[in-house]
Amino acid sequence: MEQFNLIRNSKFKEEAVDWIKINDKDILFSNGQVEILRGKNDTDTVSIFSSPITVNSQAQYVVSFDVWVEEVSDLDSADFAVILRAFGKPEHINNNEAIFKWYPSLKKHGIESGIWLNIEEILTFPDSFLRAGIWFKTGHVKVNNLSLIKLSKETLFKEDNGQILYDSHYQLKNPVFLPLGQLELSRNLGECSLNLDIHISDISGFFTQDSCFALIQSDKVSNLSISDFNSEDIQKVSINFENITSNKWKHIDKLYKLNKKHVAYGILLSGKGQVAFKNIDLRLL
Image 1 (tube, rainbow, N blue to C red):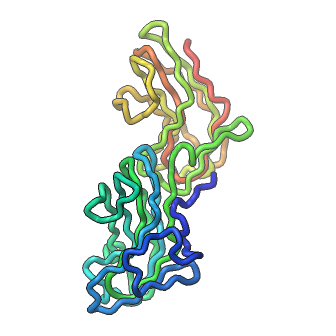
Image 2 (tube, helix red, strand yellow):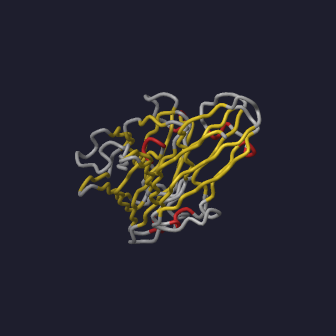
């Protein structure tokens, strides 16, 4: 699935169009990158901020950028190049107005003099308006390939030719649940059967959290948000336990005992890679 960069003009093809200049002294825009050259005695901060980006608490986001510094020893103690701030209102921009901040230290990420470094992290935000910022004090720095990608069920899953396909370039921070439906029992006790076929291109990307499917039992119809349930209400299908191997279709046939009136079901994944599902069938017995 195509995943879009949410930061407008992130390659600075039109210099600072779609960016707000707080202090753009000593900034150069060329070849899709930002370059800043500051002296050790410069005390003000060079900063520009992107247009506000609407983010929500139900999704995960991966922020990534490449950074280069000429000499690490020239960096100020506030050794940042890219920062993120989230606000309650789209017109806000100042640090004291932020309800979320991400200031990644270049030194803590292992920056070395004269060597490009990629910094990438998966983050979650409150429902808010996010701004990316180029924020730098002293030294010589270059930044390019700045991106913010939304990871959610809308961007990770698609249906194609009778199959449900999952495709993620990242190991997710939290599993993503794609609800497929709900069943209602006529009484509080019963059984159901689950049948499905699954194909994982490379299972090595799914070792950390190896669930691939989930059943959720509840006493009432739910909004199918898996975070609303206790672990004892969720029954998961394990990739490892089912002996699923890379690049082969595997049929899964399981029986579950039910003790609540409603059972919801869906795909539950957090790994890096591609997964296909077909012939999914859950029925009461």
